[in-house]
Image 1 (tube, rainbow, N blue to C red):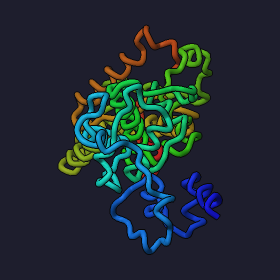
Image 2 (cartoon, helix red, strand yellow):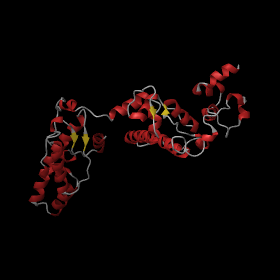
Image 3 (cartoon, rainbow, N blue to C red):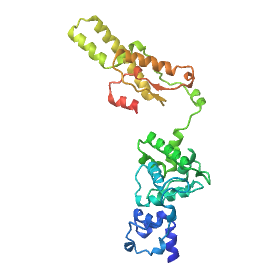
Image 4 (tube, rainbow, N blue to C red):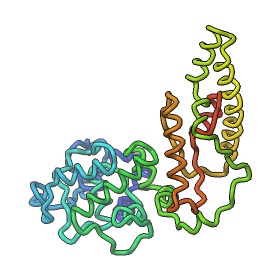
Length: 316
C-alpha cells in the first residue's frame, strides 16, 4: 500500500485526481509545504509529504547566484502575468549556482502554485528557439530576465495580455510554435517570387484623394444648398462621385486580396492631409530598396467604403 501510494505522488497530475484532492491543495503537499493545509482532513501520513526542496539556510536573502528570493519571485510573476498563488513559499526560492534547468524551473513554478511549462517553452526562454536541447539551462539571472522579456513581448504582441499568453504558450507546443514562427524573418526571395494580384488597385492621384473623405461631402452639399447654381461646387460633386467609384473598386480589390502585408492607419481630415499621406505612402512602397518585393499594402487614400462592416473587414 505504501509503495503504491508513493507511486501516485510521483505524478502530480494523476495523484490529485486519484486521491480526490484538488490540485490547489495537493500541490503544496507534493512540494513539501508545511503551512496553509489542514493535513488531518486529508488523512495522509506526514511521512509521504514531509520534504523540503531547499535548505532553510538558503531560503532567506540572496541565493548563491546573487539574486534574492523576492527578486526571483517577481521575475516568475512577470513571466506568468499573475501574483503567485502561494506567496508564503517565496522565501524558499533560489537560483542554482550552475544555472537553472528545465525541471528546476518547473519546480520553482510549482513551489509558488503556478503551472508547469513544456520543454519547448523552456527552450524559448533560453534562446528564442523551440527545439529543446537536452541540458539547456538559463546560466545566469540575466538570461532569465531576457527570457521573461521575450515571453512577455510575444504575449503582448499577439494577445495583449501576459497572463493569457503564458497559459496559452507555456502548455501547448503547437500554439507556441505557431506564434513563434510568425515572428521569424521571411526570406526576401519569397516576396520576390510572388504573383501579382488578379485585381490590382487603380491609383488615384494624390490631388484627388481628398474626395474620398467625409468632410468634403459636407462642404459640397453646404455650398450647393446655399447656391444650387454654384458651378464650382457642382464640378466638385461630379469629381467626388467619380473618385469614389474608383475608391469603391479599390476597396473591393483589397477585400479579395489573398494577403496584405501592411495596413497603413492614419487620421485625415483636411485636403493637404490626404495629399501628404498619399504621396508619402507612394514614396515608401515604391522605394528602390523594397519595390521589387511585391508587397501588398492597404492605402486609405486609395479606397472608399460607406459600409462599416466592409470597412471592418479591411481593418481586420
